[in-house]
Amino acid sequence: MKSITATKALYIKLGEGGGLAHDCIENGYLQIRYEGVNHEMCMQGRWEEIKNTFPYGSNASSKTHHRNQVQKFYEEPETTLWVTFHGGALYWCFSKQEITFNDDDTKTRPVINSWQNTNLKGEDLITAVLSGKLLATQAFQGTICEIRELSYLLHKINGTIEPHIAKAESALEDLVLASIPIIKNLHHDDLEILTDLIFRQAGWQRTGVSGGTLKDIDLDLISPITSERIAVQVKSRANASNYNDYKMRFETMIGFNKFYFVTHSPTQQLINQLNNDDEDDGIIFWDAYKLAEYSVKNGLTGWLINKAT
Image (cartoon, rainbow, N blue to C red; front, side, top):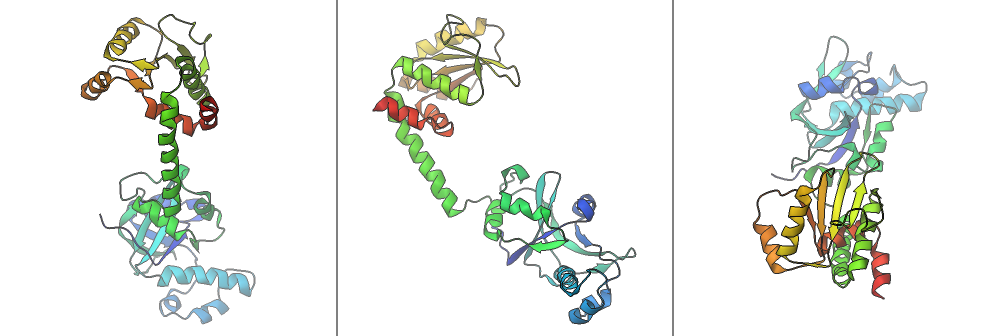
């Protein structure tokens, strides 16, 4: 799909407290109220005259502020990107410059195609993954304001990454790859400690002493939030026979929601088995890359470096 471009982006609050958002999104239009504003004068572009009799604002400055918002609604071209927030998501659209004056004194302009709440890759644009700077526009006290974070917004909608973010992600990936040789050199006991630290950083708690809860597992962990219980077996080196042996043992255990098999040095035979096995055997496998990835995410790189020096 062709990338989205825009000359500018505007945030529009669809009704007081977003009360008109649902209808606008469902029916494909933008809407402002501003009752009492002369529609014909707006259509004719008589903005200086309108300012003198504008029914909103207590002084000249605030009247101009409100008039400018109405002017944007009437005059913005189809290349302007419109944005609103509703139901915990960002919605975006382009709009035809066709203004309709309604019987209730509101004004609407139709959306081109429809409002969208996903990026071009089909991923939801939920507010949880958006920057605070962009979300701050929701606090705007008026109806329409320009979004300064245009480049960021377009990257989000297109499903692309800003160059400085891509650089940071590349640096993180380099750190993960640089951690792998260190992890592969860990003694079994240190590997077990690292695995324990990763789970603890993620909020898991041991139900007993590491390696001592059950003879067939190294870590017996529980989530204090969900009460989910997992079993973790750690081996510095492992082959297919080791893996299949523990797979059989796991099948006899009760009370666990998931099983993890962790090794920094699997044999090629084991790798081939895992790659060719389409069946979900209920075991989550971690190799050196996965350990490195979680070590970086959980701030354990310093611990690894200290172990290696």
